[in-house]
Length: 391
Image 1: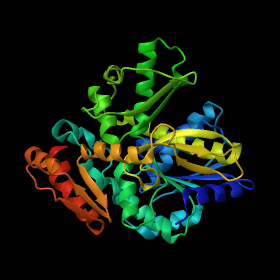
Image 2: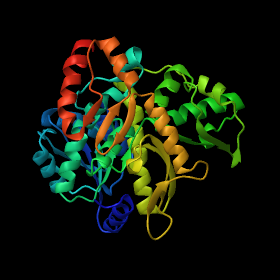
Image 3: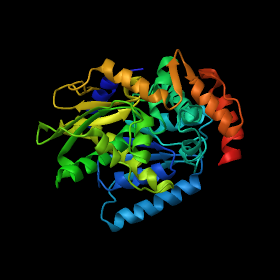
Image 4: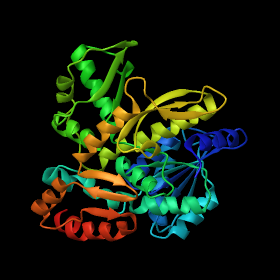
């Protein structure tokens, strides 16, 4: 598997003579929102391919996006469909990737669709890590097909990348380059809170740099505190460091939001941000700061710089304020609270605290460790013993 930097530079050379090719795998609510956002770019130099199980539903969803974007005079991007692709079937995924030859792949599929797993887990066990086998179930199949196809596409993963991407990497498998969502969802809340506290009108010019895992996205967003964990955060406004009361700011980050699929506007926007950053770097020599979970196979979420200003495009973890080792330590501390003790050598180990919570809440015994070749078995167990009984 090539490095992310190598893939970016292959893409840069290719886009000098052809359109950018973006593949969206899974057209649920995240995929639908993302497709709509990409169409809003009115980018004549982009081709989109949508891949999924139900060709009729996909085509119907695409039709409404195309008509709506035409009304807005933005329908300038070609969309094709590769339907009836079973994500349990690596050969079917392989055919899709080999046929379209994408530059960017966005995996927005879900093993158990139309359910926010957190709606079951947060109020009962206050931990999301339990769902990792479900989050990785289709991602591992996509990456297996990707490897066989010898694809050089940049891959963006949507579901719980804090743990999914490092699990693939430590198992010696091909793994996505970026994760979307999670840490990224905290940044606007923090900016809004700082702007309110400091009476800043142009809140979009507040610069926040943060490193933390999914657990803190949830606990801060829902409860307005950091669970007594010191945050790695730097805040600037007009290029000057801001002295903020972080606890006061976090308390203002708990804002009312819907719990249904409308929440997926955030994750779709995170995918959109990564895609546009990649294209701005390789096409327009831009430098963009992102926040991504699971980037480079690291546990948790990190600030990242996408730098297209030089001859060679590069992407790297941003260490101006915190060293990579400090960020790794903080992320492991954070993800432990999400129920994950470690991810090493292709083995996910749950915390003892999570096992007890699962037993108390659901009356079932979750295994302590999940080996990579046990993912499907454990995912099916979680569906039958928890989701189907308690959703």
